[in-house]
Image 1 (cartoon, helix red, strand yellow):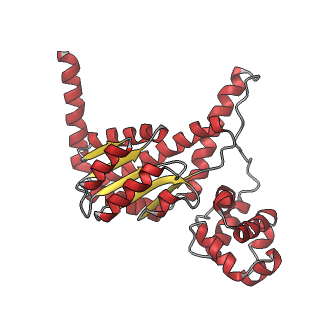
Image 2: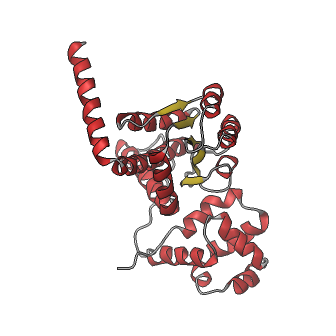
Image 3: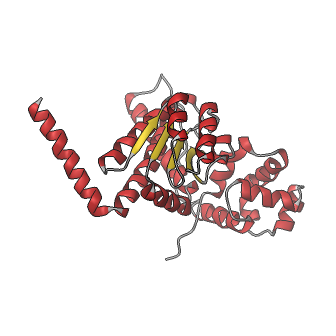
Length: 288
């Protein structure tokens, strides 16, 4: 069975805020006429959208696709699923029932993960797992809400005996980054991709030859631009409150994917380490 790639339309909607004016004009045309676009050449789309052919190419690259053909393939995949029930983010309201509260929050988390899967590159995930598995040291950076995600990743990696250290502020991040060597990894988590302190510390890590991996919202942003390997989550949450929750779930899901992949690369060692840490914690509780 052929796997139909999806996520073209979701990626366009997610990236709208970071697109240049002419790219946004082409993107709006695509969103308005997706069925027509899948049958068009670059030249024809440029003509209909009233932009240059180069703009279409740049738009495809801004969406992190290899070219317009891949974008069309993903849009075709979206259209092939058009008959399925569509779910969307729901605003959090204070006047609904408990049943509606349970359903809306759960739906937001589910949709966030589903949307993230359409823009999570398998090639980038594979490269990230390989780099993290081979690293002598891993620095995990996150500020504010992202520090919670960073702490979760550190706890997971520590349990399978992977050396890592968390930096939740500039001083800690700069100290870690300054002592990284080529082949080490810094993993920067920033939903906005605009965290100033992280931008500065990722630059320090790059100067020292470390591999930079980032996890940000989809689209162009300063944090991901510094990365050797870019991982993205969905950006389609409408509400600040629901967005803060749904994006966290999507980020944790990506962390779990990486963790399982890393553990699989060192399966026997990981199993032994997990058992050792389990026994150590159990003994500590018994003696406490």
